[in-house]
Image 1 (cartoon, rainbow, N blue to C red):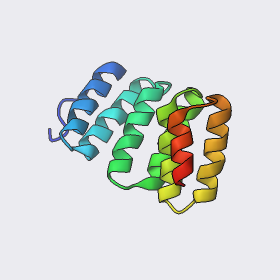
Image 2 (cartoon, rainbow, N blue to C red; image 1 turned 60 degrees about the vertical axis):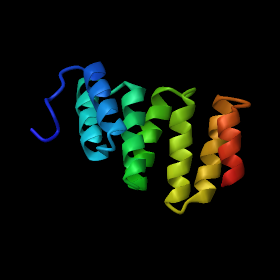
Image 3 (cartoon, rainbow, N blue to C red; image 1 turned 45 degrees about the vertical axis):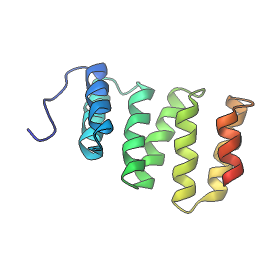
Image 4 (cartoon, rainbow, N blue to C red; image 1 turned 30 degrees about the horizontal axis):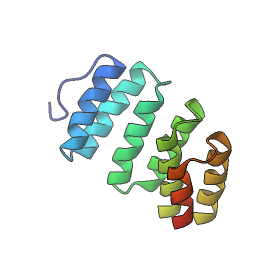
Length: 121
C-alpha cells in the first residue's frame, strides 16, 4: 500500500511515522501516527508527532487540536505547548496563543523555549 504496512502497536507506528516525516512524507506520517493513536490514544508523543505533520502541511486547526491533546495528556511536554501556541498564532489567533503560553509557563516555569516563542508572538 502507499502508506506502507499497517503498524500494529503504538511504538511501531511512531517509529514508522518518524521515518516518513524525515522523508518529507507528512500525510503518510500522519496516517502512521493516527494508526498508533488507535492502538494507544493516551500516548502524548503520537499526538505531538501528528501535530508536527499538520504544521508541516500548514493545517493549523488540526495541528492545534492535536497539540492540545498532547498537553492535556502530558502538561510538562514543552514541544506540545510550542506547537499549540504556534498553530494558534499561525491560524490568526495571537491572543489565544499568548494565553496558551501563559498556561504553559505555569506548568513549566522558566522554560526558555516557551519564553522565546512568547517574545515572537
